[in-house]
Length: 326
Image (cartoon, rainbow, N blue to C red; front, top):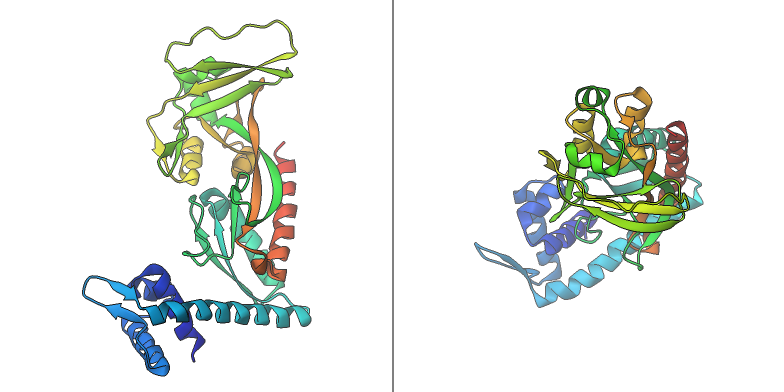
C-alpha cells in the first residue's frame, strides 16, 4: 500500500472532509478521492460512507484507522532510528509557534538549523492558539506559560520577564505613566485569545516582600493601600481600556511600535524593538510577573534527535537575546 494513501486516509478521518484533507496535503480533491477509492479496493471494504452532506467513517474504517496510525508511527520511528544510526539529523519537524516568535525571531534560527542539517525540513504553523497535536498534525509546539497537560513532554527554554512599553512618539505626545493609577488615563493595547480579553494587568512594586492587593477598575483612581515600610509590596490589578484589541500578539507589538498605545509584552517578543529604540520600557519602579517559554511534545515518541537539536538551539538563542535586552 502507498504510504501517501494511508496518510490521506488518516487525515480525512481526522477532519471528516476529503477536500479539506486534500488541501492540507497539497493534492487535488479528485486525486484524494481516487486515492481513497484505490485504498478501499485494495482492502476490499468500504472505509467511508459518503453522502452529499457528510462523510462518515465505517466500522471497518475505524478498525483500520487504529492499525494505520500505529503503522505510520512505527514507520516514522524507523526512519528516525536509521538517521540516528548514521549520525545525521533528518526528517520533517511539524512546528507550531506563536505569532510574534514565529514571524520575528524563529525564521532565521530555523534557517541556521537547516543549513547545518540539509536533510532536515520544517513545516511551520504560526498562530497564538495552542495547536491540537492530534488534529493539526503537529510534532512540537513553542508556547509561553506552564503546560497544563501533565501527559505532555515539555522542555523549559527560558524564564522571560514581561515589560510595559511604548514608542518614543507615544510618550512625547501622551506622557509616560509613573504609577499603576496613571495607566487608567492611557490607551493600553489589548490582546485577545479565544473568548478572553487580557485587559487586567497585574503590577507589583519592586521594593517589598509581602503583598497587598489593590484593584483599580474605574477611570478615577481609588485610594491605594499606603505603606511607608519598604518591606511591604503592593500588587495592583489594573483594568485597563483601549480602542484597539487583537487576537494576534504580533499586531499588538506593531501597534505599540507605531505609537498607538502602551503594550504589555514579553521581553523576548520585544527584543529587537527594545534594542533598536522603537519602544522603551516604562514604569521602572514596578514589574509584572515573568512567564516561561516551553517546547512541548504530545508524547515521548516525538522527542527525536531533531527535536532535541531544536530545543538546544532555542535555549541558546533565547538566552543570548534576553541578555542583550536587559
